Image (cartoon, rainbow, N blue to C red; front, side):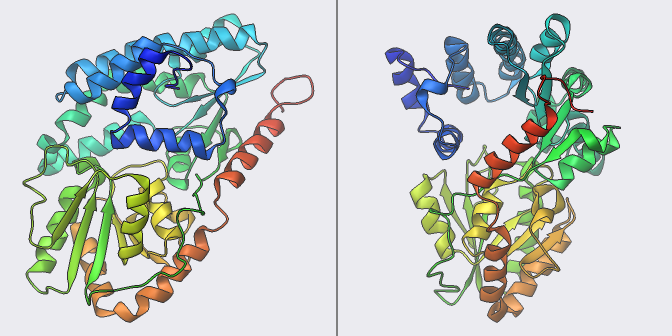
Length: 390
């Protein structure tokens, strides 16, 4: 992880970078986990800082993605060496960072169990999604993502799956993708992410406070998040009625002009405390992402009392029951976004009850329960001798 310990210079640079939304979210997740500084081992400090800088400077992604593969490979080998040194029985690595670690362990210490934590869909599945969008005529919108998920890089990342002993997945959509790739069900541990319920709650929630329904999207304004389908649907809706507002939160990704609409209220990247207020003022969460692992913003929105319109790949299938807290839609489908947005406008009186149902359905998914379940799963994988349980 990007932690710089007592390195004062690195910490100053990191503090400057932490003003960025993605870095802030990473820091908050570490805090939510209760991770203590003394528990962190520092690896690739300078390399990590360069990676963060490239993420902001290299807008084309040409250098960034090549460097990402290189630096994460160095990091992964250091993790593997440290695991062997500490006599570890099991190593958990995030997807897209694990290949070199798992290769090293397989060669030098094959008895160490290798668990791949799948934060998103397998790269080969994402490649198929992008290819489908390209065939539909949206290829230009995926130029940057295609650089990350090129055929060559997808083949490289796919080796992680071949090398892993077990998989930790956050949603049914990720589990199903692995099953389609031939992974045995017994090797998959499905545990949805958690929510900070002290911050995100539906207590004292007020709906339609200014006579309009506030729809909310939180995420990068990019094609992979389904932003083009979102805007297409609401453009159509705006031709019929004016009793709604679409709040957008997240990095514009160069699409400032595209999202500049009369019905749009663009907030940009905001801090956690401001995000809590935005959830409080919103009525319905809309998330048409083409691929996710399990969207944290979706979970936070539901915990805040917002019914949803979300794609199956967002992770929403884990939480919706009989559409009592919202609607699960197909990916790449502006027609369904339009239909259900219009439905909410026609049935605004049902939004409070559906919001309560959404909040109730998410209550058991705390970060405490997440870490407890993962810990129990690890213990089940290992027997007393440190071998893989049959």
